[in-house]
Image 1 (cartoon, one colour):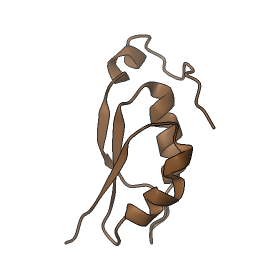
Image 2 (image 1 turned 90 degrees about the horizontal axis):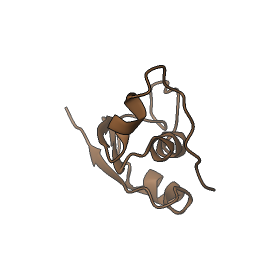
Image 3 (image 1 turned 90 degrees about the vertical axis):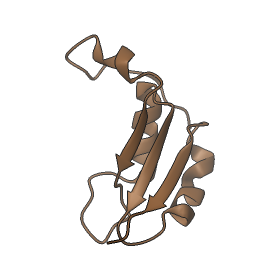
Length: 86
């Protein structure tokens, strides 16, 4: 599946600022807490906006296997993970 860029911003300057960006703080589903979007959805949105990569995090478990489950469907967008333990 591939992503197509589309305009979803009210300020025309925002899309060009996001091209090449890396989001270092994404807490997608799955999670013990309700989340509005999963890894695949976040990755498709980030790719469509021109992001270079995203870093998904969880306070509860390693995201490595979650990423591996969707990695081949993300159209080349690098996704990395970290576990944030308290």
